[in-house]
Amino acid sequence: MRDGKHLILCVDDDADLLDLLRMQLQKAGYAVETALSAEEGLAKFKQLAPDLIIVDLMMEEIDAGTNLVKDLKLAGNQAPVLLLSSMGDQLNLSTGYKDLGLDAVFQKPVNTDALLRTIKAKLAK
Image 1 (cartoon, rainbow, N blue to C red):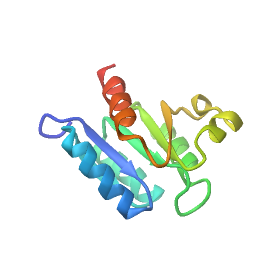
Image 2: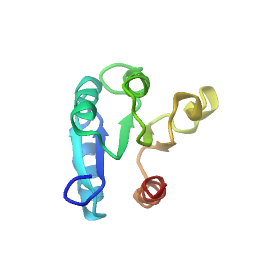
Image 3: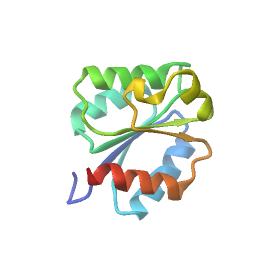
Image 4: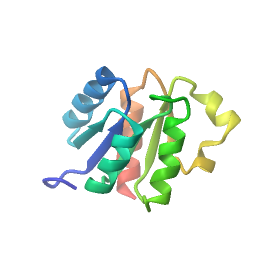
């Protein structure tokens, strides 16, 4: 938490998407930190201990998102992790997001209402 607000870390190599997520999440009452790479995301996770993490599947490398999720788990992450993907349901069919330790997968472009409902539910646990 930061200033009484849940802290959400968003990791994506698309600066425009990060700006959009930041605005939507801050409007909904969350504190937000962003990272433009998996490496930066892992460093910020270790520094900030966020309450929830949103990760893009394909960043600077094809498997950067899934590798970051695995690295977060190895680093002791207990926060819910939501994955953003342009592949959407195809990822769920081929991999099974629960197997990766993910709490949800969202298809891009992201439905903001569904994302906010999921975040609220995950942070309430």
